[in-house]
Image (cartoon, rainbow, N blue to C red):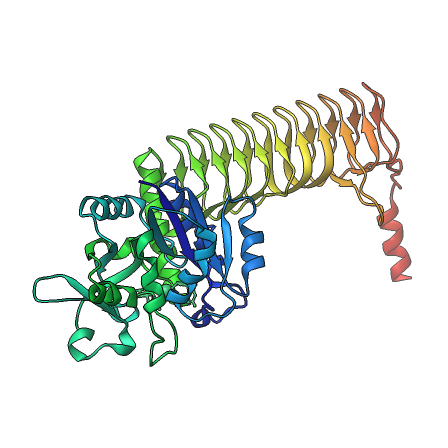
Length: 459
Ligand code: UD1
Ligand code: CA
C-alpha cells in the first residue's frame, strides 16, 4: 500500500513571538521541519507535501534540495484547511495519507510505523496516534464513546470540565485513506477560533460511518508539540538527552552529560572522553580515542583519532588530524587543517592555515592564509601580516623551518626549507632554503651608561 506524507507547517506560530517561522527553529541543530521530514522519509512515501503559508519561500530555501513538494495555504485558516490546501499537490494519489505536524520535532518513526500497521490491519478509514500527556492543556483531547470508539477530538478551548480532565491527547499524526479526504469538505469553522480544525475530521468520520480509531501508543517525549519557547527548550533538552544516550551507548564517556550539547548531525568514535560544557555542532566528526576538555565548541569540523582538544577552545569548519593537540584557549577559524601530531597551543589563532605534520605553534600566534610545512617550529608571538588593508596574501613556510619568537611574516612571503628566522624579525622578503634571516637592528651596549645618567640627574 502506498503512502503520501503531508507536513503541516503554515501556522503563524504566534506563541513563539519570533520573526522566524516556527518550524525553522532548531532543536539540537536541526530545524523542527527537518526533524519531521527525516521521520517522514523513513516510510519512503510516494510523495511528501509541505503545507506552508506566508513563509513558504523562506522554508523552501532553508530546506534546499529536500525533494518535497510545497502547497501554499494563503491564510492560516486552521489545520483542516491546511490539509485541504495539500489536496491538489496530492493529485490522484491513492493510498494512505500520513499527516504530520511540522512542530513535533521529537517525532518517533517507529511509533508511526506501528500506527500505519494498525491502520492497515484494521482496515480503518482514519487512524489517529494519541498519547497520555502529563499536562494535556495544549493538546486536543481524544473523546471516546462507552464502547471505547473514538468519537471526536476536542481542543482545550472547547472542552468541558470533564473533558479537560482527560489525559489522552492527539499527537497530530493521522493516517487517512485517500478516499476519505472528502470528509475535509464537511469540516465547519470552529466557533471559538474561526478556524477549520483537522481534528474535526474524527467527528465527521464517526457521523459518516467511516471507520476511525485512535491508538494510544505514543509517549509524550516523542510527540511533544512545540508552540512556545518553553516547549522548544524542553524539546531541545529531550533531544539532547537522546543524543547523549545514543553516543554513550556507542562507547563515548561523558563526565557531565547534562552540560554537553551535541547536534543531531554529529558522529563520535569509541573511547572519546568529553568533559563538561562541550558543544559539538553541525556535522562534526570526532575520531576514536580523542579527548575534548571543558568549555570547547567544535563546529562543522573533522577531528581525527587520538586528538586532544584542550580547555576553552573554538574550532570552526576545519580538520584536525590524528594525534594533534589544540588549545588551551585556541581559535581555529574556518578552512584550517592541522596535521598529524601537530601542536597548536595557548592563545593561537589560525585562519585558512595548513599546518604540516608535527609542526608547533605553542604560544600567542596568529597564522592566517598560511601553508606551513612539516616539523616547523613557530616561536611565541609570531604573526602573519596577511592583510594589506585591501587584499589578503599568503605565507608559505617550507618543511623544518624555525621561526624565532616575535616574528612578523609580511605576506606575500615564502621561507624555504630548513631556513631559520631570528627572533624579533620583520620578514618582508622571501628567505632561501637553509638561510638565516634576521631583520632587527643590531644590539648596541653602552658601557657605564647608568652611572653617567644618575650623575646627570643629580646635576
Ligand atoms: C494541534 C491539534 C491538537 C493536537 C496538537 C498536537 C488542531 C486543531 N489541533 O494543536 O489536537 O493535540 O496539534 O501537537 O489541529 N498549521 C497550518 N495551518 C494552519 C494552522 C496550523 O499549517 O492554519 C500547522 C502549524 O504550522 C503546525 C500544525 O499545523 O505545524 C499544528 O498547528 P498548531 O497551531 O500548532 O496546533 P496546536 O494548537 O498545537
Ligand atoms: Ca502545535
